Image (cartoon, rainbow, N blue to C red; front, top):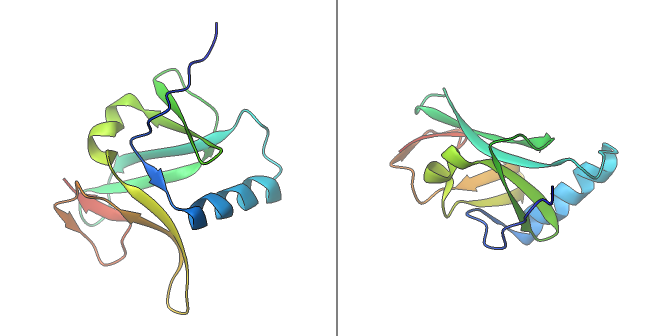
Length: 116
């Protein structure tokens, strides 16, 4: 059965994030079938936390291609993640992935949890 890749992804990855994700995938010698899982789960100080990591495709996933990165996202998570931008920050005070979510009604100080 052929897998369809949808062109218009609900999430955006900045150039810095794409570069860092390619480096992580290479450094960890991950197989080609692994893609970047972007999602949410309950918890955190504001209600939801972000899920970001390499994983295998699951049955309920939509598949996207963002800057050469295969992105897996559970269909049910799109409501919370539509329009989100994921960036890589490498500064003096902060280093890591940063989530800019236009759907978040409240966020916490750590930037990894939100409420919608």
